[in-house]
Image (cartoon, rainbow, N blue to C red):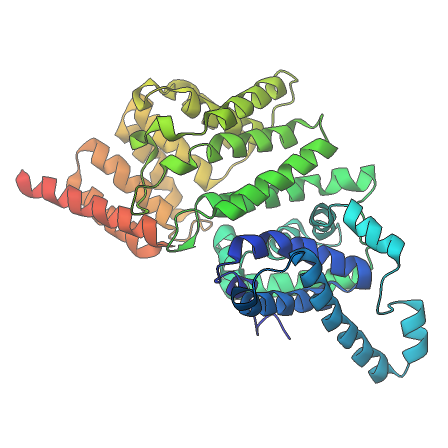
Length: 426
């Protein structure tokens, strides 16, 4: 079965979605550990997920769901291996020297003792891959995102991303990389890609790029879990701690971001009593301790910004001048149009909407945005602040037409209607 035949996301449409999504990378890691073939193992795991999605709703979730999935995927892999052995006329040599149908007990114990998901995370960040390819492959294999979701995160066409993921799988297979955690030197070289992967997985969970739900809590929680695992392994790395703090401080607002009907509630209008204050306390403590070490990086700056938002008892108490200064540092450290958009909002809160619009206008020619809805959404917000309701309405509608997220589309359409009513009352 090829990737085109079945997408992991299809299996998650069932009621077992959270469990399957959590188990998928663990099962993939276990199968790769046993058989060593990344691409074939992923196909086998996809078939196991599909079988679970079809059988579990009727038969019930098995007592040991991970073991069930590993067993089904391993059977598929065994069939695949046997076909390959027969085709190459090397049955005995290949079976005895490489695969075998059943892994030794010691191997099974080792698979239980290790977090296969974490090993898979570093495997996908192998130096044989470009950083973009490593991130895309990890989002697919570990995060369980569809090719379309990954393409949206990278602001590239879906066909381009599909080719990138396919090439990454081929590179992993050709590299012969063992399924084990890298040594200290290799781990340091791969860490940047690993952290970026985790950031993108969390971002997709916190603001889903498409579909009826604004958030995908399972992805956000998985990203936090994996980042905790990396932080436990590298407790002195400031950017690992910064990323974990950023996730905690951002995810703390999740419950307040939607209303009873699943509608989007912007930050300024959220009921802050619904925020997870234990997560905020942990995140603030983590970033405070991390910043004291020096050597500040992008994730630490973003976490510091998130902390300023979370520590404000009311929206009007937000320390916008400090946020603006931090965005300035972040933009110089990591030039990115999305950072510029956020800095434009902070500038508008400090110096007025004209200052924000002046920062946004040059982004029209930035090919990385390519008509991204966020550009229109920010411009609409700033025009509304400036009192130019006609321009605001037009940009709200333009943004609504470009986003694939139904809650965001509904929010932007509602904003356009509200602005139109104000315009009519003039």
